[in-house]
Image 1 (cartoon, one colour):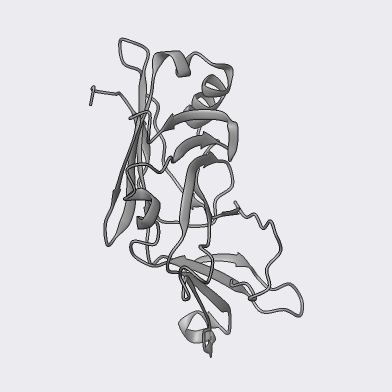
Image 2 (image 1 turned 180 degrees about the vertical axis):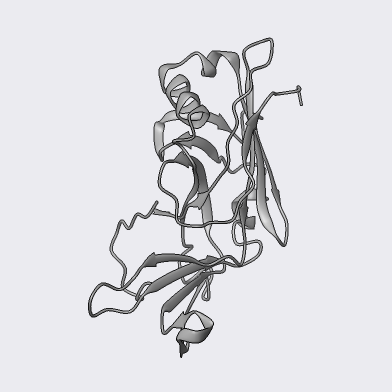
Length: 204
């Protein structure tokens, strides 16, 4: 599974019944630097095209979780339990996750909320896979930007993810993408990679 990440601004609030809500957005068409290329390689960058996650977001039977650190043993909310609401637009994938009192009482939720409240957990990261080529032939696009340092371009290899199978969104500590609007608030029941990729490739 692949992971992308973005910087967030989080605030924790508690309702009278002990539940919380977390709202935020993962922006499209924003470029993250995944690697500076080291001494001899080329920088690698990545961005997501609009509606890149629509396939599973729009499937009423597809489960998507809200997790701590990409750990399915540390769930906070989920789509099929009706505690994770998702909205896919041209600008971003927006979400609202309700953390129920029972979940908020678990140790992993307490730890996550404490880190968010302290400003230490500042990342939102989607966990996804690319669909097989037989299903979506152009799920990703690889290009090289020009060598133009005056315009902030340095010949990086850029991967644009055009279609991805979203399985989870996670709170993480070290993000890559720099644009987002995320906060935890009171709940009112309310890059490029080559074609031959390793089996697991993480970035946060």
